[in-house]
Image 1: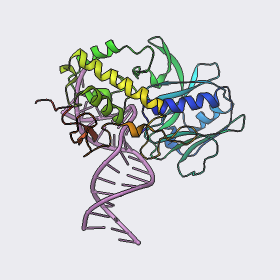
Image 2 (image 1 turned 45 degrees about the horizontal axis):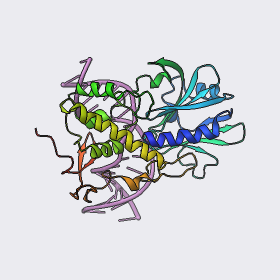
Image 3 (image 1 turned 180 degrees about the vertical axis):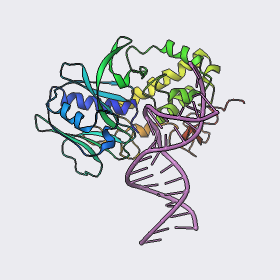
Image 4 (image 1 turned 120 degrees about the vertical axis):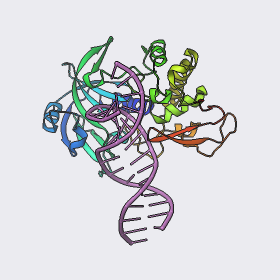
Length: 283
DNA sequence: CCCCTCTCCTGATCGC
DNA sequence: TGCGATCAGGAGAGGG
């Protein structure tokens, strides 16, 4: 379940090891991994062969490799279970794309649930930043130096929809997934079912502050992993799951007040919250 | 326009 | 032992 911190860990690994390298071989093993590249797998491999990776970038849960100097990028989304691995792949069951770099390093895209994928795209200017076309609609994330929290609060003030739903909407604020949404709401003491427009500016600011804080801390721990589906470029998991306060802690005690953490269905996924720190809205 | 539900996918796990 | 049901969830299509 890679969210912003996990994707950033992967991006840093790629930056350190693939920047400046050229792709000398590439093979697509599963068509779903390139389904978002509308020109097809043959076009993608033909254009990547011989391409030089000049750097990496990320917004929210999207990361991309900048190629050559022609303003194109290889956009990577990890989906739920995507992995960008450097070096030999031992278990090839879920190997979707295999590439080789000019120093002999293997770069592989492994993805059990096939929600992720690669695509080539042009870079465009959006609000003063260069991003690939498929990322143009994605809002800045809370760790972006140009993240405008006041502007996001203004957007949220107009949303007649639950705050958790908005946190998960990548066009409002990006990078937050189910785990960090629950953690941020717990830290801010806000129930995810509260209507965004009915929260005060101060409360909305606290929720966004908490989201930035929890993701920054998770990044410092190398990310979160529950089932080893999320790993860095060397196949290793992070440690932040030990620091989670609500997610996955059903029936355990709240670390702040001792109440029993509850689990509920929300948007077809699980939501965890403290009944005392995060009282339900009146309806 | 705004909001929300559904769907894609695979593997682990559980109850019978 | 087998088998169906359930769960995990990012993001976009499409419905209301």
